[in-house]
Length: 312
Image 1 (cartoon, rainbow, N blue to C red):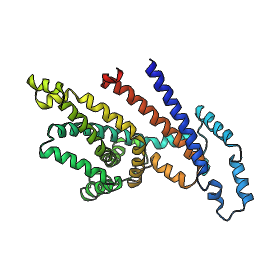
Image 2: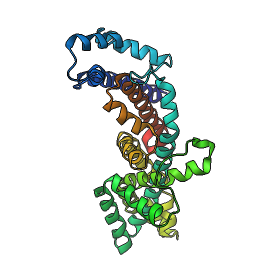
Image 3: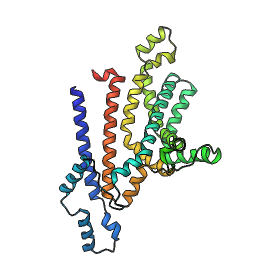
Image 4: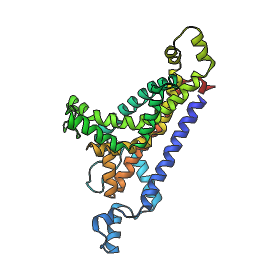
């Protein structure tokens, strides 16, 4: 119980510190919504008047606590540019981003564990060396290049999947929505898998060199069967790395959504930053920060079940 309380406290503290950093950084960056809307030729008086209308003339500490208290009540504010409800638009955009991140991460983790285990068993064979080499190549190839190659192969040449876009009816047409996310999911999964394979192989090699593996082999089990007993121990560190990569995964999602013209949260965030929509950007980042910390907390609990050694 003490461990649970400690992790919850660290999560709350991490979220609180992150909100302060987001709020401060957005205030110190050059340019603001007033300059963006009135232009660089606007008079100081006009700029100050517009900032006052938006509430940016108040003390920063007041602005911060107004934002946080409203967020705790479920009110993320309204866009300074469009006037639309920010919470509603975030929910609308998450219908694309959440499936993209969940399915790509699941595919990357499962594939990395399988390939990593096989590469560990065949470390002295050509197949094992090829798996490691492909992982190295995957680290060097940018995500957008992977996406473009998949589009050229499966959308342009084979014409079996759409090149981009998302149906206007959304998940009301599940087949079309699912087909539009196949290539983006594969693209993002391949970008993650390049790193995860190395971690999976490293931990599988540790088990192959252990007494438990040699005992299982001496008892008559095949190499694959003996290593299968350690799948949970290999999966645990891979999940930990995946949780640590969530912020990087979000960056990859932004690139993927741009390449495949998906109306997700990442593409919206890039547009809002360009428009200097501070209220919308900080509320979007708040949702992302809370989500990242909650996922990391969940991964910690899952890893405790997968690897009992963490509890000792």
